Amino acid sequence: GEDVEQSLFLSVREGDSSVINCTYTDSSSTYLYWYKQEPGAGLQLLTYIFSNMDMKQDQRLTVLLNKKDKHLSLRIADTQTGDSAIYFCAESKGNQGGKLIFGQGTELSVKP
Amino acid sequence: DGGITQSPKYLFRKEGQNVTLSCEQNLNHDAMYWYRQDPGQGLRLIYYSQIVNDFQKGDIAEGYSVSREKKESFPLTVTSAQKNPTAFYLCASTVGQTMMNTEAFFGQGTRLTVV
Image (cartoon, rainbow over all chains, first blue to last red; front, side, top):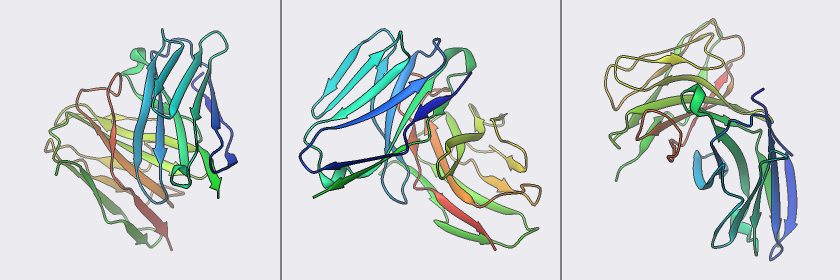
C-alpha cells in the first residue's frame, strides 16, 4: 500500500517540545521527508532522512526513524509561535519513478 | 531570484468552464509536478513531467490536462469533466527527473473555487 498516516492536529505551549508522528506502509521507501507549509503558501523542505539511518539532527529539529515499525517522527525543540504551520511527512520510492507520497499533514498550533 | 511562480493566487470558475493555472520556474529544473491539496487529505499527484514534451499521469489525472512545451512552464487545465475542482493547487519542480534524494521546490499555490 501507499498510505502515509499522520494525526491531523497538535497543540503545544511556546517553549515546549513538539513531536509529530508519521507511519508509512511501504518498506521499500528509500527517503523520508518532512515539509512545512505556512498558511496560504507552498511547501518548504525541512529535512529528510535516508532509510538506512535511525536519527538525524539539525539544530532544533530531530528526526527519528524506526524502520521495523515503519514509524517516523519529527521533534521540534523549544517550539516557537513561528513554528505554527502544517507539517507533512512524505516518502519517495525508487521503484515508482521517485514520486513523493504525502501524509495528510499535521497542523501544529503553538500557544504563547 | 530563482524560484517557482504560480498564478493567479485565487481563481474563480463557473461550472462547466475550463480554466488554466500557470506554473513557471527559472531554476532550470528538469521535472515539474502538479499536486492538489484538500483539507485532511494531504497532497495528491495530478500530473508530472520529467522532460520537455513529455508528461505522465499521477494518481488523480481525470478531468485535468497539461502541456510541457517549454522547460520552464507546466500549465494545468482544469476541465469541465473534473467533478469537484474546488481545491488548492500546488506546482513543484526538482533539479533531477525524480523527487528522490532532492529537494522539491513548491510554488505558493492557486486556490480555485467553483461558483
